[in-house]
Length: 92
Image (tube, rainbow, N blue to C red; front, side, top):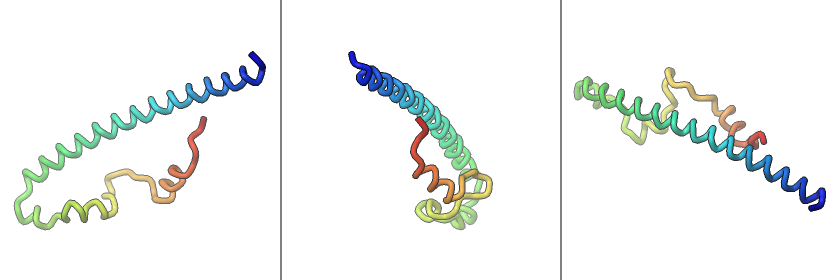
């Protein structure tokens, strides 16, 4: 095997390792987000069950709620940080 082929194998091996690690991190984040979503859905159901019909009628519709800004209690990075996170390549 030539040194060039060995170098290519080393680079490939390193990249595969880095990708596997990133996949594991993303799987964990997905799991945490899924669990958080489940908790929020349960809380939402409880709050709806405790609210009276007048209070429920004042809530925005589901489609309007998805376009409104996030509530103060939820932590979400500013749009500028989101754009940077989406445009920056992953570290390998």
